[in-house]
Image 1 (cartoon, rainbow, N blue to C red):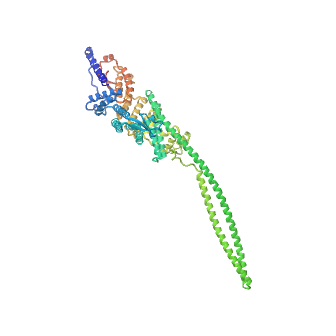
Image 2 (cartoon, rainbow, N blue to C red):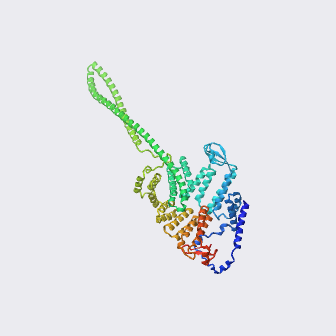
Image 3 (cartoon, one colour):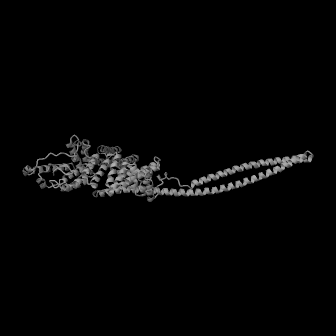
Length: 638
């Protein structure tokens, strides 16, 4: 393999020597007619292509040589041969390009793959090989068994260190956190909490740009937190609403995609759509559980209500019986009182007679005893009266208590916030028309609007008007971007620009700011035909996000489309030189768009002025030339 590479380098060197040696002598004659190189004054546009030479290290020649050597081996999947050159380059010039970080990650993960010895399954079975599917008949995959655990950990640590240094030099903190979680879930699935922490961080930082693979696992983690009572049902549902916003944002992107990016964005949108399906399926199941629970509780309440209604009837009947008994006691007592008066009069008469004869005296004594018995009986009746009155009071309280219980039972079912995620509000069961009516009645109450917005999202209702009202009263960076994207889709560029610019006031992440400036560049180009201002925004975007090629491609496209309005000695074809410079820069710094940039570079090269046109304009290849009109950028004649 090394021999093949040396032969390739030697061939290129010989070709260069031959091309120099074969230059026609007539070229010296031509040189007399060629204009002397005029000094080129660099403009702001030229700064797009300026690069700090120090990013290649103290010995830039050697570092670039090491870069070329490792890349040749890497492209042939010869990782063992590539790694020594890669390590040398990485030590010399860690800031030069993003590509070595992606390549290094791939090479070290391939070494980690080779350390996998077997799959440990949930049932304890150990199956040789590196396929998760090996455990499908053993209750599922548990974790990997490595040949040497220390070596495997060392490879993983190396990859994570690469990601940390990449973040230091090229930003993308949220994406780095997502990648760490993804790698850890692939090789150390058992590190569940750490994986979730990485995914949560990625979602917090990236907001609507959070990778699709972070969303549902993070949501599952929140459900487990609810089960452990670490969060409440409303917290879970708020998170659910947030994830719905993210997936909807990415699904909607395909409605505003550039035609040449449509396939890629549609494919990406499909991944977010799959996440949305999972989220909505879960929500539907929870709603069904909630409805089943309510039906079950309602049935229980009806049974309880019937029970208490019977209790009320029984207690009222008993109460009436107690009243009747009390009344009979009172009647006896009243009659006794009447009899007592007659007995008292009779006793007085007997006492008069007793003084006259012994028989009457004896009759008086007997009557006195009889009266004592009556008095004793009267005391018993008084006690009975008191007991009956207490019984009546108890029955009255019983009727009151049962009535209150029956009233409680017949009221609405309790909240289901603690079952299956719950957290539903009073708006959850409303249809879209009712929710719109609630929105119209509560436009100034942001707290209520947020509840209505959540209910609309969950029920699949149109939400833009409500979201805009919320953003106008309680703006956030991500929601400003959601509103801006909708306006962009509807070609309302004035409002799109307004909300994108507003989002910058609340955004602290440089990567996200860069993307906003990129969107503003698109608005200036498409909506206002202001290419100069569009380039300024694109330049800001590129400056905020190192290693991002899209802004350079965007500028190159504007240059390519300006041939008709940039007439010069080359009939405007000089714009293809500066366009080629932009495409070349994009391909160099950003491997994610390198293929697209090279394709556009080929198109630009086909538009270069031919040799005759260059000659008759008084120039020769290699000279510097400043393209005029709005572009104002210098380039090399080719």
